[in-house]
Image (cartoon, rainbow, N blue to C red; front, side):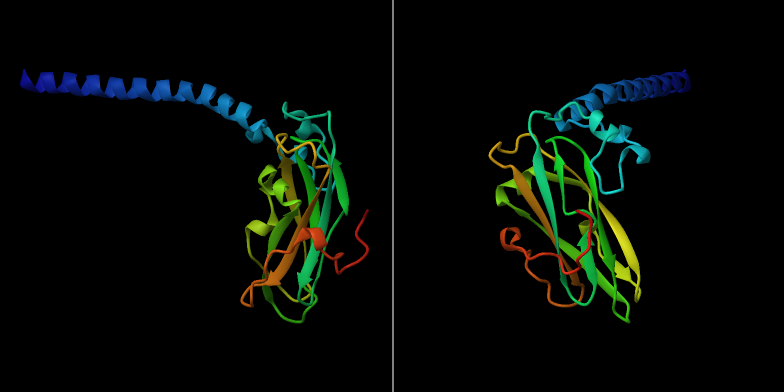
Length: 204
């Protein structure tokens, strides 16, 4: 009898655990929807084909974002600074986006040295007040890279500008300084006084 009671108690505990797991699974759906409403974008529903990689603004991906502010347009300018013997520049000089719109641009890099190098980029923003509202979903500045002599790379920067950004801000400059890892790390550039990219010839 004691063994039977123990078995019944074990079955009861397992039933409670199973019920709890089902309840947790159902609770994830409204929780996920709440997160999407707060962020304004259903990131998990974006497919690779919907995130453009050609340096132009997002089309269908932006349509998925119900928080896009179509009443205003912000010009985002791109700048590149190379602290070494290599080529580094954006594929486009500027784009116009709506706040809340997912946008992807490309940066191009070439190690023109005759040796392997490890490098990383530091971003900066102008005006400074735009920095907390400039959200990068993907960026080469998140990682360090090792490049062989003459190796070329193209890296995407996918970003969204928060619609809460002040309406006084009409233009944002995103500037990157690419430096070799192992040397002295440079300070982030002041984008308000950033120089033109070293490599000329990127698309307008």
